[in-house]
Amino acid sequence: MRENRYSIGPFRPAPSLNSNALLLTDSDALARHASRWARQPWLTVDTEFVREDTYHARLCLVQVGDAESCAVVDVLAIADLSPLWDALHAPGVLKVLHAAGQDLEIFVQATARCPVPLFDTQVAAALLGYGEQLGYAALVERLLGVKVDKSLARTDWSRRPLPAAALDYAAADVHHLAEIYPRLRAELEAKGRLGWLEDDCARMADPARYRTAPDEAWQRVKGLARLRPAEQGTAARLAAWREEQALARNRPRRWILDDEGLCLIAQRQPRSAADVQALPGLPPKFVQKHAEALVELLNRPPIEGPGLTLPEPLEGAQKALLKRLQETLRAIGERERVVPSLIANRDDLERLVRQGAQARIELLGGWRRVLAGDALLALREAATAP
Image (cartoon, rainbow, N blue to C red; front, side, top):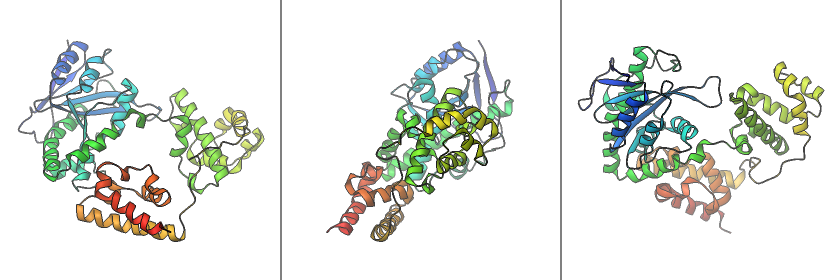
């Protein structure tokens, strides 16, 4: 049984935590510690992975901490990770992460589920007015007065053996989260906003958020707004094809075709392999490999359906109404000390202008509706009344 203890390096240890951590590299050690984790009231969790040349992230480490200790699980060395997944999915254990999106995507890839219940410290910090999308290092420095050395952030986590300094860096993440979590929770409770966080984290933990269906891949394409409606339909078809290729080959989307090239093809609408070859800027290998498939794809009947193309820009009275909504939202945010974009972004407000109470936006649900949604909807209805 291999269970390596190494000291965590150059950060100030928390009074409630041991100043060392465990490296778990075999199934027996993992099973023993996972059994204890599954009985804790909360755990701090982080991951390290590599993704430079693949569609799916390759998980390399999972760090787990609590109020007593922290451990680094070498997932590349352990064949049976089921004890780890069982502990992370234990319904009675709160899982604390920071900016959990990428971690949750990896967990869905591995287990088809998200760990719940969830407490995202980045979301908590935003709800408390510390700033939207505050980075982990910035939050640690603000709350604990500790500077996090980010020089190891770009470590190749698939390398074995990993340097001791890299393991220290990985373990430190969950160590500091164990200090930060109780403070943020107490502040949320004092301000009556813990329920806000629970609502947002419940939405974050929907596995569907981390699965991209090919027919929805067009929503990720940068530059789509500058295309005409017919060209947007072509871009949607190309994006679906690219997503299927990337999934099948487990390669990044941009390795198949970048967004600039995708939009160029959608604009030019090539109808033959020669037309594809004549397009400027496309990689020769891409043209050689995919020209015929692209021609066949683009010569299919046009795609039709709701939501496929972007709406026309707001003009006149609608544009003036959007400005009033933004001003009102800004005032509410200042009064409540909440970043306005956390309540609603511009896209949400534009949809509210167009669709009113029928808009399917987070602004019209949960705490956002109580805080600002009803007021903004009333303003919109008054402005559009006959």
